[in-house]
Image 1: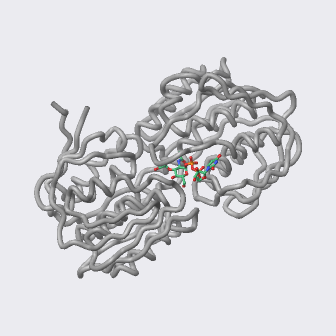
Image 2 (image 1 turned 60 degrees about the horizontal axis):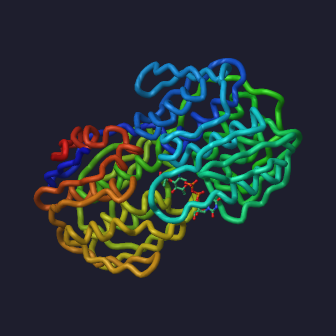
Image 3 (image 1 turned 120 degrees about the vertical axis):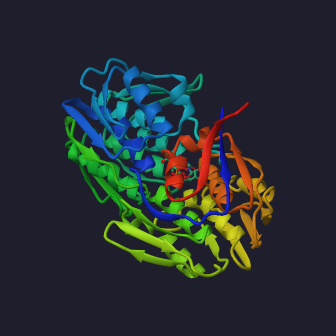
Length: 420
Ligand code: EPZ
C-alpha cells in the first residue's frame, strides 16, 4: 500500500496538460469490441488503473490489445472468443457494465459480473436493464452476475426514469446493432456521452442527437474498428482549476475544451478568481481572498458531482459561508469528515453541507474515501500548514494519471511513499 505525502503552503505555478477523459475512455474501450473486423487505435487514453483493468478484461475476452504507448491502445476484437466476463477486475470497477451492452449488441448474449466502483451511494443499474429489456433482451441476475440474451434485439422507444450517464451510454451501445430505430429520451448530455457516440459513429454506427435530450440510433448490421482520440478530461481539468485557486496560484491548463468547464469557471469567477479562456487552454489565477458560494450538483451542463468534492476543499478556506447540495449521490460527503481533521468547519445534514470558511487548514493523516474524495484531500494537503499524509490512494490512481508528478511540476512538495 502507498501513501501520498504533501508539505503544504506552495502556490501552484506553471503549465499542466490534461489527459484524456476517464469516463469517456472507460466506455470507449468496452465499445471497441463491437467491431467484428478491423482494429481500433485509440489515443489520448489516460494512464490510470481503471484503464489498466479494462485492458486485462479485454485480453481475457480474447481481444488482442497492443499498448502503442502509455496513452494509445490498439484493439483487435475480431477473434473475441467468449461472452463471459466474470473476474475480479470486472467486479472492481464501474465501467465494466459497458461490456453488457456491447456483447448484447454484437453477440446477443452476455454474462458479466455486477460492477463495483466508488462507495458514493447505492448504484443501481435498473435503467440499463429497462433499456435492454425494451429491446427484447431477457435479463436474469444470479450469483452476482448479469445473464442476458436476446433472440432478436429490436429498436425501441425508451424514456429513462432518471438521467443516467451509464444507462444512456450502455443502451446506446446496445442499440447500435439492434434491428430498426431506437429512441432514447431523458438522456445524459455529458461530453463523454457525445464522445462515445462519435466513436461509435466512426465505427459505422448511425447515432444522432447525442448531447441533446433525445438520441436516435438506427441499427446497422456490423461495425468495424476505427482510429479515435478521446476528448480531454473535464473532471481532471476542474480539479487543477480548483487546486490553483485554493493555493492562490497562477496556472495554465492545456488540452481542455473550455466549454465543458463552464459550470466550474462560473463558480470560480463568482468567488473572485481570474479566469482566461484560450482555444484549448484555461488560465486560473487568484490575487485576493475568495468568497464562499453555494453549489448544487446536477447532470451536465450543471455543476458536476465529480468536482463537488475537490470544490469543497476550496470552499473550506474561502471567506464566509458556503453551501453544498449533492443531488446525484446520497453519500458523497464522507470526505468532509476527513477535512474536519485538518481544521475545516463543516456541518452535514443529509445531502447538504454548510461550510464556514477557516483561515487555514493544518496537515494531518487522512484517507481518500473514494476517487474524487482523494483529489479533495490532495488539494487540502497543498493548502494546509505542515505535512499531510493521504492513505488509500489506490482510489486516486483509478482515475487521476500521475497526480503527484503533475502537481510537483507545478511547484508542489508532494511525493509517494510505501506504507510501513
Ligand atoms: C458516471 O457514473 C460516472 N462514472 C461517475 O463518475 C459520475 O459521478 C456519474 O456518472 C454522474 O455524472 C463513470 O462514467 C464510470 P449515473 P454512473 O448512472 O454512470 C441513478 C467518477 O468519480 N441511477 O449517471 O454510474 C444513480 O443512483 C465517477 O469518475 C439509477 O437510479 O452514474 C444516481 O443517483 C464516480 N438507476 C444517478 O442515477 C440506474 O440504472 C446518476 O447515476 C442508473 C443510475
